[in-house]
Figure 1: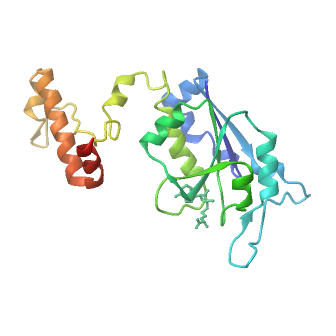
Figure 2: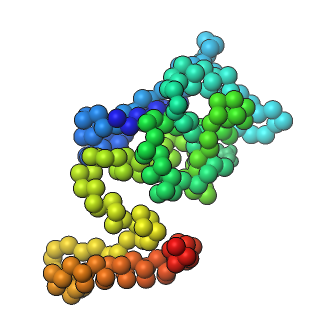
Figure 3: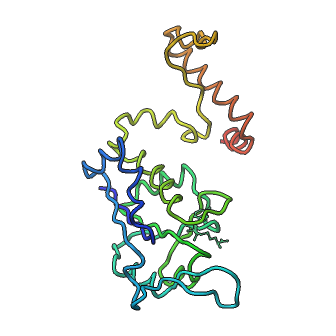
Length: 228
Ligand code: SAH
């Protein structure tokens, strides 16, 4: 079973959308698990304080290193990689998702306010991971994005593993266009080749579409693909 843990101030939002459809079924079948830890449970004073003002001044609050350390140490899993969701982190992508799908267990720390006391990162060997060049108000939505992209790669979760291989990014290209019934809709017909039943021709058409779309929309991916 692939295991994950979340450290958050809003435990009630999990598993949220990850408990629906195939992921919900996979959760029931114990193909993956999610342990949700409330950072506030690790607070030590009677007000359950988790944050404080930043040294050096400035707005906002910073999550306290000592409290986060309590939370992490109380829920330690041997050999587990721990990630702090942060706009400063290594950019998350499909390759990273595949790498994490092969871990036994990962922990994700959701920050809030101005972030976390820097000292927690080095003392607990925490890796920073970002879902893109923008700033969210908290790490929870980023955690959903990361878990969603990993779960669909776990064996047995999607049911049709073959479909993963055809998808955007898996081969360095964006996906080709898809069509379903009706064959003619608002005077627009489905491309003729898809009705031909000629699987080689269809494969070639899909690849050429993938290449054209990638070249047009993502010159960065196109360069990498061409150089491979
Ligand atoms: N002051 C910080 C931003 C804090 S945003 C800075 O400028 O770097 C509040 C929290 O949202 C962060 O602690 C982090 O957990 C989460 N977050 C914000 N943007 C994110 C991103 N792009 N990727 C992953 N997590 C993000």
